[in-house]
Image (tube, rainbow, N blue to C red; front, side):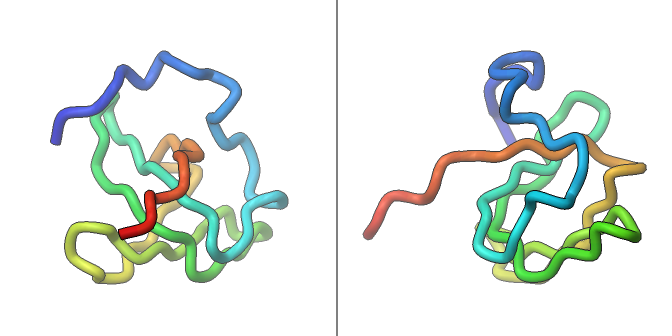
Length: 79
């Protein structure tokens, strides 16, 4: 999956989940590679985890602040 460098737009990186809500669009990065993009369905800030529905597959995916870098992404354009 090709994507812009994870070092661009540092203001969009998520450092904590207290301001993440269902419906937010998130990119999940691992080892400087974009692994997933999707819409947040559930958030557990006290555990440092969230669930998102992947754009490509529609399958729920668990993402953690401990194992991933999370970044906000723009809303999907309307079809």
